[in-house]
Length: 108
Image 1: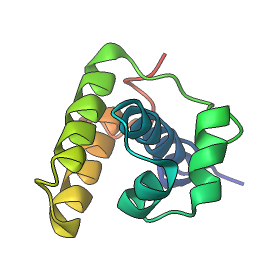
Image 2: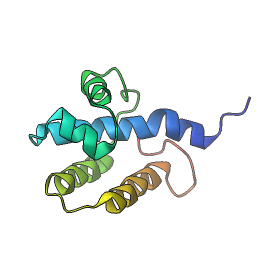
Image 3: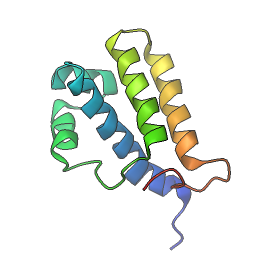
Image 4: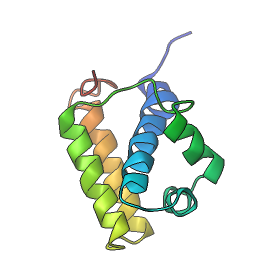
């Protein structure tokens, strides 16, 4: 069976972004419950992100980590509504995918 790029995005990239973002939020002093609410996931998912049980397959390059840190700050400052957060998340995913559509160009 052919593995399509969307499969890598759903199975690997999105959980990795959520894991990195959850870690940044918690490092900013946001509780796991609040981080879960911001990411629209269960608190148990945030716990799994932080323990490396979920979203650990990809380690992002510094370029992506900087963007994720900035997004965490914006969430902490509550300067994004749900639509804004969704747009920023999609921007990160597009950067990771790269202009040629390859699903994993910006990861180590």
